[in-house]
Length: 78
Image (tube, rainbow, N blue to C red):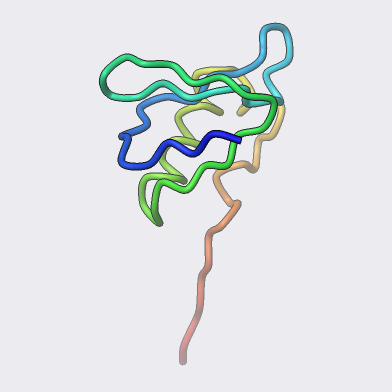
C-alpha cells in the first residue's frame, strides 16, 4: 500500500473501457498514481468536487441522472 499525503489531487483517472472504476489520480504537479483501489480523502469540499467532475467528464452522469442528489442534506422548518 502506498499513501501519498500532502498532494493536491486534480483529477480522478478511470479504468479504460469501464468508467465505473477509479484506478488512479493525477496531482497538481502532473504526476499520476495508479492502483487497484483508490481511497480519496480530499476534504469535505474537494472530495465531492472531484467526484462530480469525474462523473461529468467520464459520461457516468448520463447513467445516473440523480447523481447530484447524493450527499445532499436538506431540512425544512416551520
